[in-house]
Image (cartoon, rainbow, N blue to C red; front, side, top):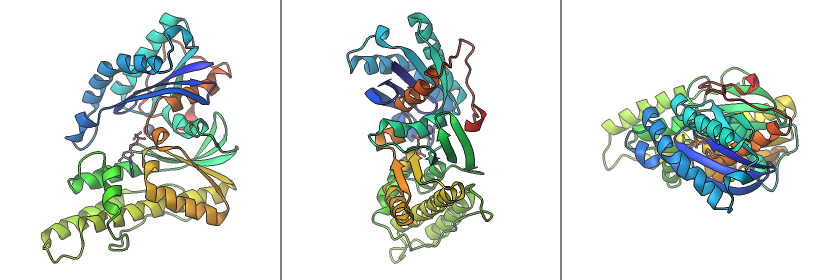
Length: 339
Ligand code: KG4
Ligand code: ZN
């Protein structure tokens, strides 16, 4: 079964073609980075307009690459939420039209389910049950994944998402958008022990996250640091980046391990834009190896938003006989256990 997967939930226009929920035939992403960079974050109205401009060429490219035409597609899967409503609607209306015109099934997909199932595009995927951490600009969630379609939310952020914290700190340091990659690059030359930023672990046994205290602590620190900035100041911007990054990574690792312990899982998977962070990947790998837990991380191209993960999630719903009709609508908030 060949599925076309569409994701327009945020600032990337994504289309991909996946066979039998596993084999990637194409994966096309049109990034809007240049459009949003100057604003230090995603501007929803501009994102919608860009999706309208890009959706048809992106889908055409996804078909052209493997030499397919519309009639080779057996079903179309599209993200319905969570995400920016205007942006989501572009993908949804495209998918409805494509499904109707080609007389193929349409299935709406939760974006977070897509992130979790992105791991099934890899050669090695975890056995059920496992713990999943989806960590990006819009979400920081821990799940107990028992099977395809069977998820329990174990924890989530009470305020900012981890990627959002990277983006806000980068904005504060005038490093542009998105913040994650540039902070990671700076942190390589910085000292992670230079500043002891706070780590919020919340109450004992809590699997929730909170990054707003850390963000405020960094903001206050930067204000003071700017006032005292002289060539003799021993703290460099790279030290701030490294100390901030290590605080985020410590929190994520602590919670992932606590979640795996609480549910007794032997496997953990990591996905979402922040999962591209090499410091997080290597430190989490060290911790999991030490604790005897198998770690699965999506490859960088499947960590950030993409249509392939939506095609995988759509496949597992379609083969169960699920279908959506033309009343399919966007959902800005869409907790995964409310599917
Ligand atoms: O999954 P994604 O592409 O889109 C959302 O659904 O949000 O994630 C984007 C987020 C941004 O906040 C970006 O700063 C962060 O992922 N990110 C990173 C890295 N690369 C992207 N954060 C930390 N380190 C990175 N290398
Ligand atoms: Zn995402």
